[in-house]
Image (cartoon, rainbow, N blue to C red; front, side, top):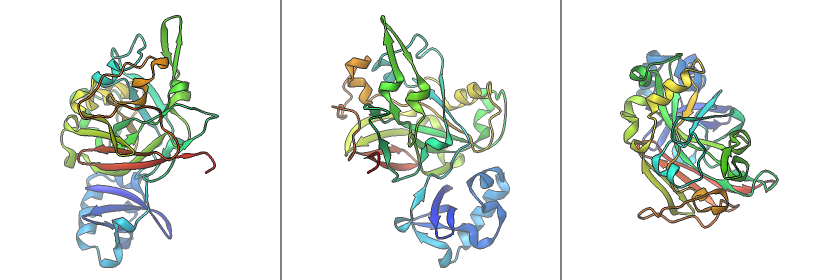
Length: 311
């Protein structure tokens, strides 16, 4: 099952993808379809009702996908993020003493979230080194604290894509041969978390550690990897973050990015680019006019343009 959120005349609505159309389940007047979070919290009852709603949807409840304005399928209360979680990405950049030894922990807020097609804002007053990172995002479905690794995936509702947009000149700090990260200002700002285009339920994804992941900028292939290259698996990250927080339905965990970032060619910030077969090395960071495509197998493609502030 694939969930979307789309703009209707009455405001944002939950929908379900069915081929080339979106089914608007509001025709059933059931409160379980009020919004994405309510649906996630409804559990198996909600899923059974959704299957029925899709099957029985009249033509009036169907909208052509190519005519719809998709929104972020969910605006999470919290985005818990793990950096430096791919082997090759660790090798291509300047590292801190803990890189690759324990998950790097930072947070993005709901204010960072934008949807498919929405612009990533370039503002030199914040950063001149805007970088993009395609990441698998885990959408929690069941609450839990101190969740064991072996039961962690039982708490997952589904998966989506997040572009972890990063201000590298805010993130990376170096002095006297020591590197450290300022993950607050470098990671959390307006439009720094494009999310979408849909949420795919966990049963359709199966093993989240077997998904191909790609990034293209202006059509050039920049990143290509597989989630099997994660240092800490989705299950291990759920366990890790549940030590600090009671994970709740609708929370999102983002799981790191592979090699191929613009950071990797930035020697000023410690970049150590290693050529990847078939990939095109970045010659610069993102600028207004660029189009970023983040693709993950089984989920789809999240597209966002870069636009100058005020444009």
